[in-house]
Image (cartoon, rainbow, N blue to C red; front, side):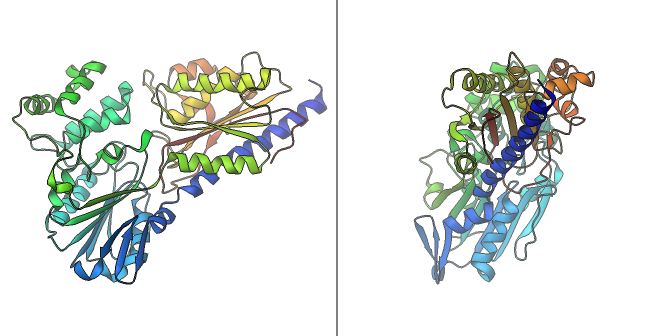
Length: 463
């Protein structure tokens, strides 16, 4: 390309990158946890409405507030605004650094995604609090992404170390969040409806910010207040599917076998009377973020379409599919012509085989960069952006990464082999020297991931 044309392309790519970040931030704003609480939980004098269900505050003696998740602190702050001194006591557990000032509700910071001792302390406080509730009390439970890891309360015979090992093994083998939580529920005293069982006969209202594909209530934070659809036998099948039996702690295998044989009580199911006074309400989810991102993209001049808010499966395969659609837009104008914005959400999985540093969003962008680097006319431009809505991608301080169709040529000029970094699960160290990491800090919300793919030509006017 001629120098002047090269400069035009670079300037427009810079603008597209800014657009992608703004589109992502619009998605975040739509799932602000405090705003979600205020939309779905309202006080009108002596009545408290949670969705369509109303509680008569004159008939309620004590109100206890508990919760866990990356967004639970701002959710708790919003509940304090609504109920004030009607709150008797409360405690919520959040990931380290995801804090907010609270006046009536206690706060515990703990480890995520691998649980730690602080998480156990927080879960014990919650269980003790709800166990003291009576028939004329109300328990308000605030659940958001990360809640499962932040409520570790091992079952009898299981240690925290056992649960930490199980979580890490499942993460490394590429198990889905549904599968991870199935095992978590059956190794816990609080998950899989068991928190609701402990609170019975008190009424319980659970407000949920969903971080799972399909918004399945029994999967979000391992469903502490909803009937559990999984069984000990399901745990056995998951272990067999990933061939991890020899890697798991013996105590875990013994408990699962005892459950299969009926020697340990199953988690409560739908017919259990403990759920008779329970209300569960989703206050925000991934599709809310994706839809808001779409409105922002359209306002910036892009022809926008939502691929899906339910993308799962292997990260690299998902990236290649997104890259292929971007190239199709360039070649045929389908499914929409440029300037185009493709959006997707959900949560993919990475099977860790290398010793690098990264997360599923960074790996997605690196894999997609390899795909859009192939056989692309450089008069056309593609930007790929993927980030976690919680601001943390895997065990890193980045939310995700951004790349364009020229990223790999910049990397190769530095002597970097992108395929090597991908094979080593080392996307963080690939993008860091290129200044292509997306750094947001803790967003205090969490509805899985948001991906933004922009396709333009030099004649397009967007932004």
